[in-house]
Image (cartoon, rainbow, N blue to C red; front, side):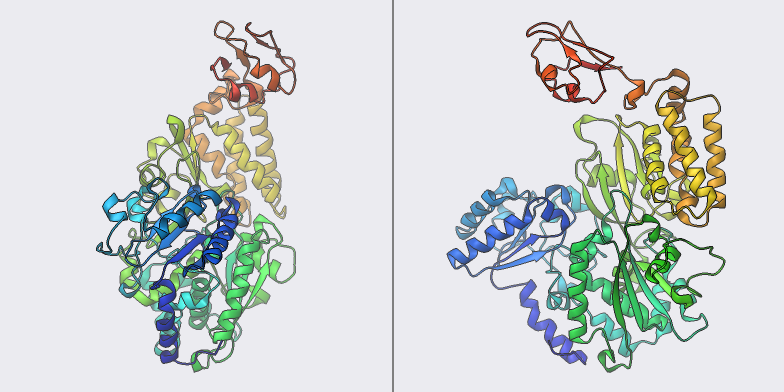
Length: 637
């Protein structure tokens, strides 16, 4: 690669590579992010490559990132000149061979298409107008089938604008989408204060959990005393069920790099770090390639665009500690020290990495930066609510039909996310609650389902935005058990530095465990509330300060479940094993022997075509009999 030194050279590269993403021949994209690979995308890609070679087809085959609809992986998108973009879902080796056969005949398989457009539009003659990808300049509009699927209809792609559309390992495709043009504009046409002012006016807030105004943080760091400053990207995503940062890095790493370089210029930094989970090997691999490509083109290194500005980025792999997602613990880890938080009386923008002014933002925040500068603060600030601007990516998981990553405007309601986008709760079950904000977030009940999702509203009801985890629960969820689960996670992940966090969480977990075992006592609820207050008020970092949220929110909205466990020794959701009993409705039992054969404890007795019984002394309440009974005669009390 030749170093790009001016705008004319950059434009030439862009124009040359537009044909890569808007080709004059058929282009097939296979989602090869972690979710796709886990579902078999590797085999699908290999079969496609073999078929293209065997048939000597003039088709471009591309590995792309995650388009968000993880439930429907593997996803294969076909872009054929004159056709709309067609997205096939749940592909396998047999299906993809048939797709190739149909493609050569100019036909499609409607039953496997993700987007349910009208037949005449799918088979079109190339007359339908392209559907623009939200947030992208007009010259980069693309044809999308996603308009027709409810999962995508209310989404607005900004941070994920390129995920699932470009080859993340090909910098030319990122440039063809306008990549690094914003960086040139910033370095050549703007002074640092102008960049900071634009980010401030946009209203962008940190997407890592705290929601601190990004422009203000950059301003503080730039004006802190000292000649050396650092820029850090927090990619240590450790929340259960959260994988937003991983998908952005796997699908569009250059958007993060460009955002960091712009931020570094604004702040006055020449050295940056990306702190990433060691459990993200594909993201690490993709990042390394992206950094090398950016260095080869001169976007990283010395005298970028002949502007006199130097900037380099290093990757640091985390050690697997959840607490290292906290800013000061993360910086201690980069320095080679134990990942423990410190008191915040001195902010990291004044004294962070190696006691130098340090600006830390997460992956999603950095990915927003290039587009905000390109399209302007006014454009971005019109999206969202008064105090929460732009979009937010959520990992929508749990008891929900459509699991995956959703990027939505701030202010959208929980109902719209769960029902309109997520498709509601499966199995005709009743929605019970949704937990937002990761393990330290709160559980929001059905009665608040029309709550607008933004920083302030979530905090008001006892939860928080966090990094973007969103776990949906149905009527079969025990809220006491849920609180216990998250406390168990937080106890394991507490660094132990603060006595209140270390011992307080442990004591709260002990009480919750007793309650779920039917050993709850009068006064336990009040003791949990008192302990929650102490832990929240006396812990150093956000892990301890927010650890009581699962307990406090479930007590606030589901206090009756706690009381049923303590007073009645019953689990209303029939989840806590010590408080439930499995039995067989003998009048309805047909004696099919299925449950008897499957019981691991041989706790079920009975002959063929005769009623069966469960020996309560042997039953371990594993639920295998309930799951496999075809006649619905296994009951739980």
